[in-house]
Length: 607
Image (cartoon, rainbow, N blue to C red; front, side, top):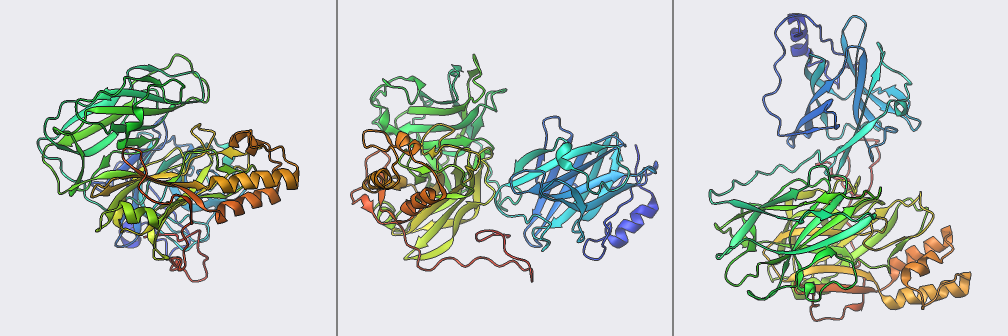
């Protein structure tokens, strides 16, 4: 085992491994002599492997007092290999911010803050922003601890925010100096997604009487088709007394991680003793049994990338008791683009429950855009917006007088989604965002706990915006259930429980019909009211002008609202032709504390 010399330890103490702010060149020397190893930090709160071969292991802590992230990186590399780990908008190796390590012919180890340009060529950053804390090389593994500020005010560095962080990394061979102008796209770069700036919240302790159960698919043979929503009706375990669900998590069949896209468990809102029809098959198939519309109340949800959800200590999802039906419906969305055959699956959700009740019953509400093919994204669009409205008229009739507190949120789109955010509006004034992810990935749909719960009052509105990139598609992308279709929703976890289950919108039917008829008369498109909306959108001759016309239609048209109760019925109100939410006083962007450096994106939240 190799370690550090006393001289190195002294240098580290005096300069903290060459402090980034006061030294242009960030070089550290790990002299491989048989001396005691440098002590590593005792504990990091978070960790993940970056690759399936486990050559890269990352640990980290977040300090919200100093706005600094502390990292510990283990890289399994040979002496003649160099590596880089960094960050980019969506995990691409180009236009990325890198931490680069290599060793020279004298076995001295070096690190630099670097960046790649649009062609993937690597360059040293003039502003070095990593502070090295310790390091050692041991049995073909490089272990280095370092720290970096959330926002370095360097345009070649990637600011850390509260959304998804896309990590890009690679290993090169045969380099004994900084690999200036090396093309990183030729080095088989890989990527991983994490929630780097996790909220600084305590994990509630489970009561001693906590127990668990799972609701899983009954060894389903996944159909050999791209998209399947599988439904399975079953029963909860006996719970004669009321319990609270205090945690749930995905229970994914080993080997099926790439085909299980998301899972929901719905409670069937019927009286105890009433039997719900048994069903085990595709949820969108014709001929499915009647009576399953009552199975709408979500009690557990998971999507790719989601970690276990721990409810706050004051709330739990109610379940069980003499007046609670045991009927539930499991829905599993299988995404099988390579049309695998004969794959068996028994995935589902694991629940943690306790009879020790908490102060509040909690619930899950769905906001955003209705799953309907009246919505479409034109092809060849870079960032086309869908906006889903939970209007004030709905919350006014559906929420309790004291309002609700949203403590967690899960954002959801399909493959072209790039950015999602939920605005909170009260009397025309935009309040702080409920949730946001400006580097969203449909492959990492974590349930994010909110550092400060959003307090939604009756009469408030929530506006969910999704932005999509269809630049590589030649046909319109339609709203719908298939993975190649699109969605724009968020699952809001809140307390106290109320009867508002769904608050979503779509364009008014009359408005889209009138537009399709206009396109036939003005542009000669072969649209027809005898066709479905999907076929009509496929009949449009998409140009920059027709795409702009559709965008303007969505921005200005009245809404068709789903203001639905848990049993699927709508609250009383005028829901067809409802007005869109108007923001009279937008939220001011949070300025970066960086003179001369431009802001990045919409209301970037650095802390």
